[in-house]
Length: 473
Image 1 (tube, one colour):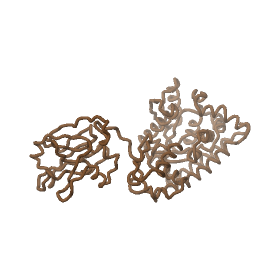
Image 2 (cartoon, rainbow, N blue to C red):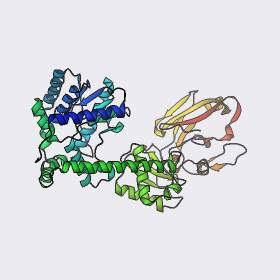
Image 3 (spheres, rainbow, N blue to C red):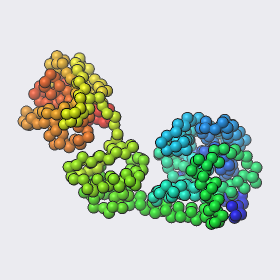
Image 4 (cartoon, helix red, strand yellow):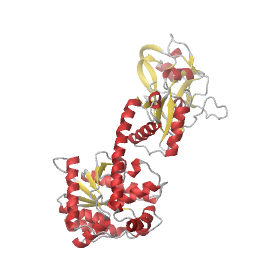
């Protein structure tokens, strides 16, 4: 870089300011137990020494990825450095399997999960990471090249809670070196005699961040000296704008929430930009992967244009987005169950119903049907002696089944009962029925047919409990 690096006193002062801000933000009276994420590289080694010099009494946590032949040496270097300072040290080994997002993303996910585990094991409430100014600029530029919106261009926060990474909403993560350039850290380390290790993968241009770091950023530094501070300043402005969008998103979410879903009448009253912002905020609060712009556009188009009785379904990697009675729901993606079918689709070959007998058990599990059938003692239900003598079958409905819930109520099709009960269409196919010969005895989500039900002590009432949620019978 063309500019002169900052002196050690300036870096120490910046770190002290960051620590003071952390004290005020997280625990005004006393800092929580602190941990340092220690890779052994330049940045984390400087961070460890600064934390120790400021009396934070940190723990040092290292993650062994096993991706480099030098990984054991890096771990040993970290252990020795911590021991020399009298700092407690711990480490975890992780196995990194390449996922859809690549090896870097997979390693990052495993690393933070292991760091969160060590924080909990040692009672550390605050994890310090060594991200610096150059890291911030790289992050913003990468997000810009990916076409990200304000959330991506906001860069990294100086401090935040990251339950999605650390696995615990009580843990906080702070980046006290975020305003310091890497060149300044290197100068500081040389002046203080701090030894560090070099990760050979940091020079591999196949990784996008390395290509940016070694090919693009030097050119930017030559043409626009000091550009890092300006990019970081723009990122801070974007972060402030994102906070306003989050506040607006929360206001709209509270205004449109109706139970577990969104009232689409209220949603449609918003502008298109506010609808997009609302849905992104909704996904964020549910800790779901942020939808792409194209995916979001498809969903909003269906919300705005589909007729009222249409069965809206937009698939997301984590959930299904469904509509029921003009309300929008995020429904967990559940596995298909044996024997499930659309009763109106004659092209599907049925699995035979599962025959069973009741021998007095309190409950019987039916994994192929996704739950447990309970036999509860009740004052309204089946005669237990009669029920024991029946050859019973559990099945999914095939269409045409009829149910009478009470003698003073009419016999109606299951479809009409489901509609009257407000059971969404996507749940109906997962609700089994119980037959005794040709007689329908029970339909999960609705109840028992009254033809064999009596009211006196010692009766048996059937109740279905889904493996994912209790469904009243």
